[in-house]
Amino acid sequence: MSDANPDAGLPIVYWRRMCGFCARLMGALDEAGIEVEYRDIWEDPGAAAFVRSVNDGAETVPTVVLPDGRAVTNPPPEALIAHLTAA
Image (tube, rainbow, N blue to C red; front, side):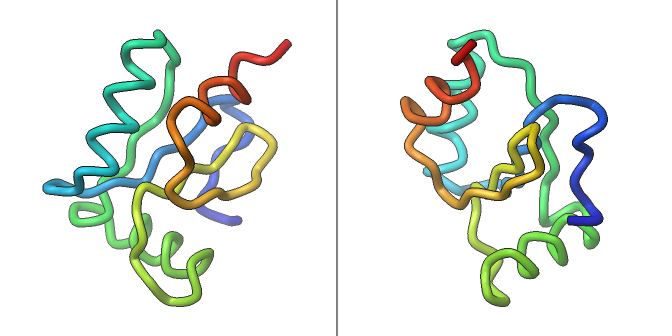
């Protein structure tokens, strides 16, 4: 996962405009007060390439890289928040 940034310790959310699933996830993360890094796949060719690399060539978003480096695609907001806030 060369495009991930596990050293920062923040989840990375790959997204694009006009994506309802992205808006829902981003709103839930914001409401929960979870700090994340956002990368727009329409503005960042490297981000788009990374998303394709973990989604069998598809630009499926939201794709989230967890602090441990694992990538998950279109996670349910509640489950992602629970995972990120678990102590």
